[in-house]
Length: 317
Image (tube, rainbow, N blue to C red; front, side):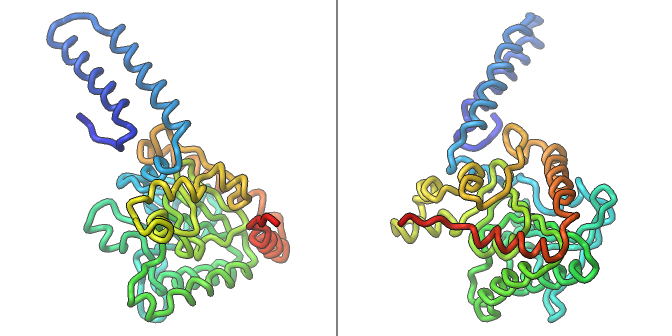
């Protein structure tokens, strides 16, 4: 039987029954097409309804799915002429952040994103998508390059947070992220940010001070990881699913609060079920956002970005 997430088990059980009927029909010569079609429709209807009504904890599981598309998958599927630019020009190339120049439908962009792996070996190479200060400084170098040559910027974010190790603190992790927040605000080119999976804490925000911020349907964006929140509130990281619900980390809540500008629809079952469709939807969103922003002057872009982030946060008196 195929494996899946816990809440997908009813779908997998129906699919297993379908395979059994197909095998029985083949071996016995019985016409079971009607029964098979009925079960296939039942599975499709159940799957659609299930994925339209996921709770935040379930979305978090999808956002962390091992087979979810990574940054370089999107680069390969929606861009041409990608040229990766390495290093922070101080001496380190943090592989958790990858970036470079590419074209989308002929339009040049500077595209920068956090990178995870799909295997243990790859995750070790990319530090599980957790950037160190050198990664943020590399991103900042590419932001400056794009600004100098008037190239719009796209960031694609999927990180559980900036690397929390002692080495990162020694190399000024907080200062590196803070510098990115300040300097991204000052850039005079369009900036489009997409949270494609996990978007946790300052590690995500260090690439997300943008004119337009989007969230994939089953991604999440939060001030603190659900595990971190649970550790603080309940002294128990295993209560992360409760924390995910309390934090209101998914697209509908974030749109309501004015944190993001829109949600990008995923294929039924999640982005990992159809890479090409997901990349196509992301590409469409990027081009639509760019067409909306490209007529704005540098001053207008800076003002729009500043006003957007200053308006975040609501207080009850």
